[in-house]
Length: 70
Image 1 (cartoon, helix red, strand yellow):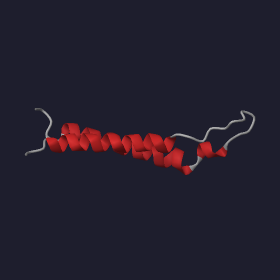
Image 2 (cartoon, one colour):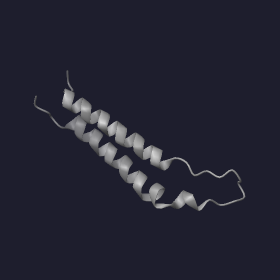
Image 3 (cartoon, helix red, strand yellow):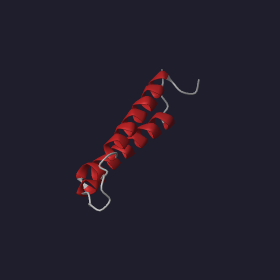
Image 4 (cartoon, helix red, strand yellow):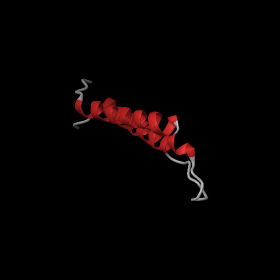
């Protein structure tokens, strides 16, 4: 096969990291549209979640591009 077991483990790890980033990004809605919710612009959504998602993408690229010798 073109992908080794180590590469497959890295692919799954990258997927888990990306899913956790999207979970960090979710939530914070308001039930009343007239009330502004300041939680939309907190550190978790504006900085932490994008960094986690991008690091998951980097893990995926490394898992695909790196040649693992078994």
